[in-house]
Amino acid sequence: MNKKVLTAVAVLVLIVAVTAYLNAGESEERARSQEEATIFINHEGEQVAEVEFDNILDLEQQEFEETLRSSDSPDRDNMYTGVALKDLLADRDISLDEIEQVVTRAVDGYTVALSAEEVLEEDNVYIVYKVNDKPLPPKEEGGSGPYQIVIRNDDFGQRWNKFLMELDVN
Ligand SMILES: Nc1nc2c(c(=O)[nH]1)N[C@H]1C(S)=C(S)[C@@H](COP(=O)(O)O)O[C@H]1N2
Ligand SMILES: [Mo]
Image (tube, rainbow, N blue to C red; front, side, top):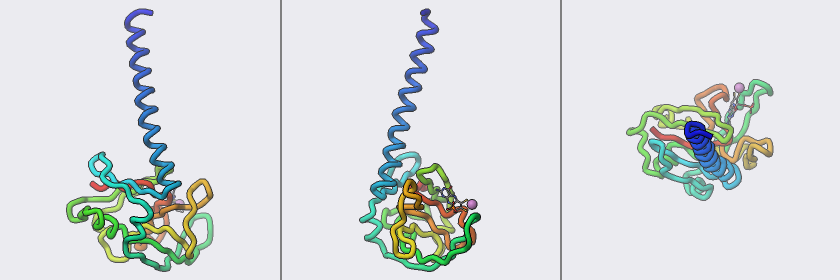
């Protein structure tokens, strides 16, 4: 092999190794999010906090009724249990006055951006972990959990991010 070919092969091997390394990190986060109910908070590309289920339970617990409107099943009135997203951010000293948006990302890659204004609204954006008093099963068990975003001011559920894994504040 000549030098050019060797260099090309070396570059490819490096790219594959780096990609594998990055994917391993991602899949570890996905597993922890689904199995241990961990939420990762990032700011400017850096992870700034990990939230465990105990931390969620330390916040003020909220219960409310909301109608779930889905494209493929009839409307259902559900009772949700969870915490306000703004309470979690305040608990981690993240000021919604200093950021523009909160991007929510799920284990399946589904990504929903929320403006700081809508997160600040009273009784609007929640992280829920129970529906009708039952924990939300993870994705592989056919559930929408362990956490799901509920946006009460959105009449339809498109932006209600299921299997929540990450919050990017920026
Ligand atoms: N993580 C995640 N959340 C999601 C989706 C998704 O594909 N992944 N689909 C959205 C859409 S389009 C709808 S209508 C609602 C309800 O979807 P379902 O009826 O498939 O549960 O979830 C929303 N949240
Ligand atoms: Mo949908």
